[in-house]
Image (cartoon, rainbow, N blue to C red):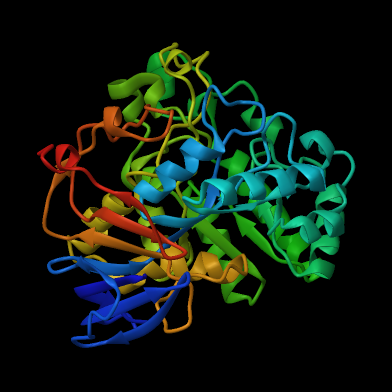
Length: 431
């Protein structure tokens, strides 16, 4: 027996919404139409809901192997399902680092065994993230890696980055760049601006990110490789990425909800719950990121979901780790801010959060079509609900968005034809 999703407004590949029924069987969408007969299907009443393709997050930290006090593959993919995500790309800065094919295979097998969302590992560029010698790119891709990154540190040596771009080009996968010049950022905790000075905390200048992005664009053009830039934050970086795209260089870039919606001032309000790398920056940087999202320079939205223990995030800013969670609130944050307000169409947002990342990382996802995998999320565009970290399925609780009143929450997520998340009445009553 399969599912019949009845009466929802379905997002079509052209970006339009159409009231349709979807029939699901054997992991796939097998029929789309109006007033489809029930037959032997179990009915899901989707009236007043919008049916979207399962979302794709190009940047998450699942912390497993080795950091399971912060998150596990199970809890991380449960959080993904709660956020409407059917696919996530996980970063390699675990313990041990994802620099061997056996680790890639284990991550994929574990995620598949839980079945909440498909996990696509991004493997390490260099052994141990030390920035010295390349990993075996061919073996890692054969095991299931969809790209390569030394996320969390970044590749400091230009010669190593050049080698990486050439090796990845041969395999037709992107290099995923955490852009940070450590000679400029070392020992910094917040954006190098007024708030850091007010708190007497060492700052991280925008140049630490922008100069590495400029370097890697030059190397990308020279090698003919492909680069994807993570969590872009300063206006100078948006500008050089825009110029590179106009020049026809194979560059894509992501932006996070927090860099679109928040500034350095969050540190005064929430302390270490607002500490992230790259840091929340000046209002002019935030505005430039919004402009970059709207004009397509920053073509993907990524959560950079980075859970830590409550004890770690309760520390002072100087000793607390970078990062906070985002999988469960990313879509309603973006929907409320950009679609509900009229700044962006729903189709464009779903492009940024599903179709485009799926295309960049060669994932079979991002649209709803007959014959395609039944990866779907149903959202409620009418009900507002406040962000309550105590309801999170992730082990992480820290978010500077706690208390925000949002709409567009996923109410039901289907992955490969299985219902993997439904929102409870208790959560829905949290107004």
